[in-house]
Length: 163
Image 1 (cartoon, rainbow, N blue to C red):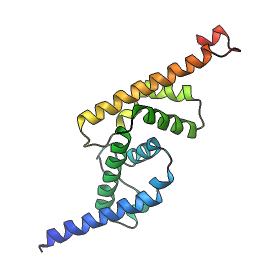
Image 2: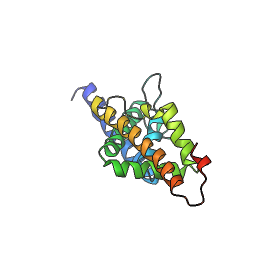
Image 3: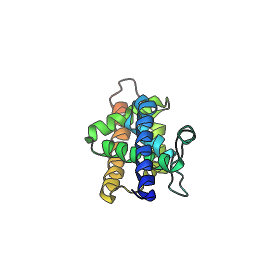
Image 4: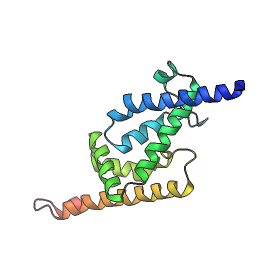
């Protein structure tokens, strides 16, 4: 076996160790797909596209951490984007609820800032990215209209609340 082959094999198995470690210690503790996706995307350096995690980099090479987190990011994104729209909506509502912020404020921020556009992994299929973004737009519209629907049917609500 050539030295470069040994390095690749070693790095590949080390990246697998990173995946297993990160999934069991970190991702498994996060209830929502959106929590996992947002966290993983926050570990990606937007200047270089490389993933960093201080704790993992103290135990593994930076190359293995980058590769392992890249794989985790892709897996979490693929799981989320293949869920039915209703389950994606429920997941986003669950994530929003966990933030303990007014849902309408979160919906407004997501619609205005469109920060969800940085959530897909770098090398995901363009159609998967487009589907994800269109689903988010639909989900946010449903959440916005659901709140208006609740106001319209609130027997104690006032017409002024709708403006």
